[in-house]
Amino acid sequence: MKVFVFTPAGTVQFFESLSCPDIFAYFVIPGEIGNAVLILGPWTRIIFLVLLPVMIDAMLQHLVSEWLFSAPGGG
Image 1 (cartoon, rainbow, N blue to C red):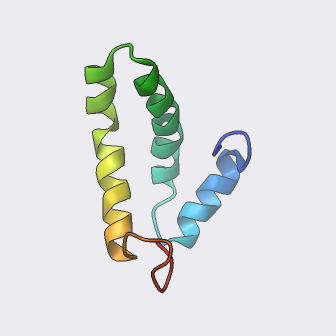
Image 2 (tube, rainbow, N blue to C red):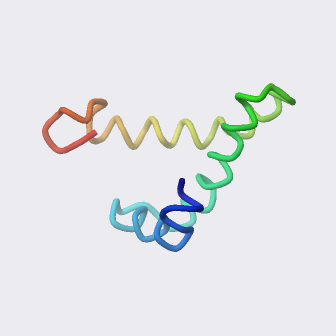
């Protein structure tokens, strides 16, 4: 979705609007492709280890703005 709908440039702008360094967007885009490969099954352990920093960053972003979309201020 970040590649075909928002485009990489739009994804970078979104990350900047969240006060994140724009370089993080370039890690998240392949991370989403890795998630699709993870679902398909090949090399699951290797892909999991590669995606772990991306998932930790996603968790930290949600800790700041709470976990739920119904929460005040988003999610």
